[in-house]
Image (cartoon, rainbow, N blue to C red; front, side, top):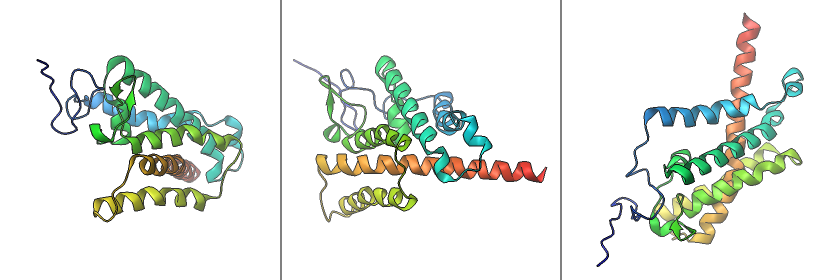
Length: 196
């Protein structure tokens, strides 16, 4: 007789699926390192020629996309090697078993929507070749917000393909939002330096 134990919060098979945030608690140091990576990697990857020239919000977008892609690859490898829920922390994923795709016969560490966001961030590398107007990035976040609200209010039940597509679009928008945060930090620091 097979005695499997499942996480009561997300339904994951504790012995065979990827770890969930409900069962595997990350240390404060691990959490701090992940958040520092998100803030510092994009800044460290800004080319010097961009820093010494006049810049706008779009100047940092390619390096932000590259940095977030690098962070995701690192977190994915760490997640797969050590079976620690680093990706779930990065995305704030609920990790529900019934909403997560299979990856090599194991329930993937992210739900379908967060997997879409993951892919959207990776695809944002197109910013090296094409940068869209700022308002388009904001519009790309609306389908996820609308779908999430409609599902939460029980007006329209979402499904896997819709979650994947809205997540993918939001991934583009998320890179833009992180880029705006970095741009704001750079403006603030340049303003502070000019006052000194």
